[in-house]
Image (cartoon, rainbow, N blue to C red; front, side, top):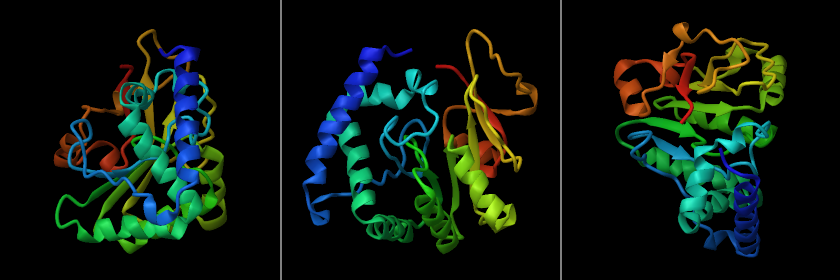
Length: 233
């Protein structure tokens, strides 16, 4: 668990970095689109800053693995997350155009994950994620969110069937946090070391093996929209 001082340090560093890029032109801001890493495997992914863009994170920010990465590698991790956020804020269309271009160049392993860090920030952003999935039906795409009310509002207005078949929205469940899952979306939860106050049916859920490539090969877990969990780590 991270201390209040550690969280304040991360927020200070992110705000300082953001102030720097806010003063830059779009042409000078490089988007960060990862082709994968050791943890998630060969999965394209785009992230935003933790805490700063995360809904309902007062509980999980104290355990967030991306906070740890920001503390360990601020010059790379914070810089990449903030560049993405500033570009998104300055020109959402350009942000998504660059992502589209990168996905168009992908010849194999067409899997895409939104938000190794960060979350859905507003309705416009969510609708652009949906439009991105429609433009890339050959990709399997998924994301996690605690912005429950926003997603529920979109589904209420449009219907769950309006979500693209290749896009999975996983509600991120954190112990003690009310999660109004009105449309029975798949859930990703954390099993706490000292036990969870909220009852969860762990036996009926897929246990995250810690690498998305394993789930891709098995056809299980978040890749196929199966409710899953990970042990606190």
